[in-house]
Length: 384
Image 1: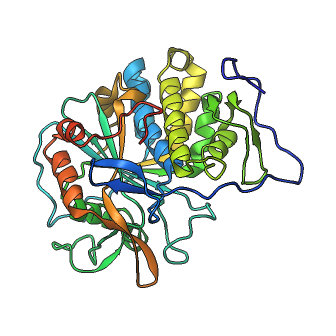
Image 2: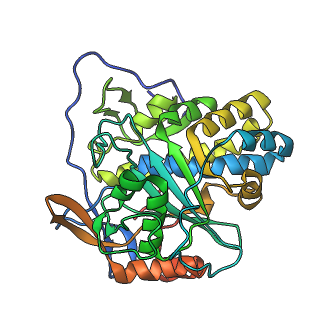
Image 3: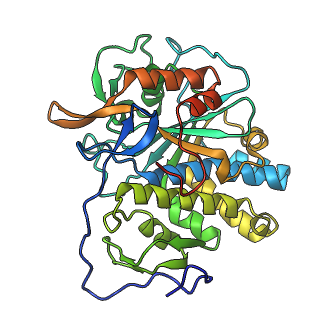
């Protein structure tokens, strides 16, 4: 067992057959209209529960890889890696009705996380593809920050019949259904319909590669908030202090919520801690100056991602160079609550606040929006 002031003392342990109690029920979240804050407790009604483990992974894979190339200046090696990236073409069928480009120099990237093997994430239709994480990442023209807006998978939106449709149409469904029905092209079209933001690139990430990415970094030193036993097999034990975790252990710890008084807020806090550690470690001198370690990290990341055919890794490296965890701001698309529609539990958008947020992205005015709306600070431990 480690004390908070000690270095890591070992890995998470796995107890015998018995396991601990499941702990308190998870807390809920909602958008606070009085303060404009994305994260606040809501005791009166149940809100959506963002998969912050998935969100952190999507962000770190998209940012850390580019930051690593920008910091190391490995252009020749980067060209080789770029040529080996798996490519997709979600934009060629989007020929009508797309939002205009209203700000030069800014980039809007749709980050999509998929997990075909996760038993807790059933497909919308049996046998169909699924996505658990949908994030609109905005990089302003100043190229010194990134804003990541999570779109809850149960968000109730208009989904066009086809990606080629010029009109958004009147069909309503969860936003996740767009991916199940038409994969990336229809999802891009649906997100653009909902946000009125032009999407420049798409990065699709397979969560099956998460463990390998952490392991390629040699594991991470994770601060453990309190003694807990995981509710997931093999019911690992985590001790308060700092522990050195491999990929499987890190993913397990950062999925826990029921053992903490603030439930989902604790999980969100731990995911942001994980993001900070992974991003800073990936861009550290130790990683960048160790050819074997850097190559292992890059190979693990590239095996887990798929990008659009026009995505330029080295161009993005220029934009991301020097960017670290404190330069990321996490947000959730504003919502007014949940409801039951057609037997489904759905998330209802707060359209007034959502329009203001996405208009700020389209106009490349997110710094001003964040200041006016008391947006969460990107640093760890300040989640509201």
